[in-house]
Image (cartoon, rainbow, N blue to C red):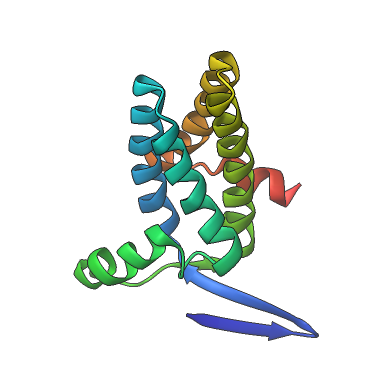
Length: 140
């Protein structure tokens, strides 16, 4: 983990490939949650999003897996980026997962399906095309 300090603001740098890896796993989990309408899967994904928001991307559940199992097997230069925008995107994902979970536990299938679908769409865009919708919202 690298940090850059400018004036009084500290910028945490992460491996830019990590969020895309995490988005691929998230896409899979959310697709399964959508197909099965599983409160357990959406609850698990909510916990993953929340871990990234609270502890940072490197210390999140998927970040731990990426750092210890995937990253050591990659070669070439390590592209880096600020953690701020992807971490904000995880916050947005957590909000959608929370709404989906609320819909699921209260029996409101429509809310569950719509909220899960929005989160799935955003995760798929990042995994397939490297387009982070939450990062774009952060930058605005």
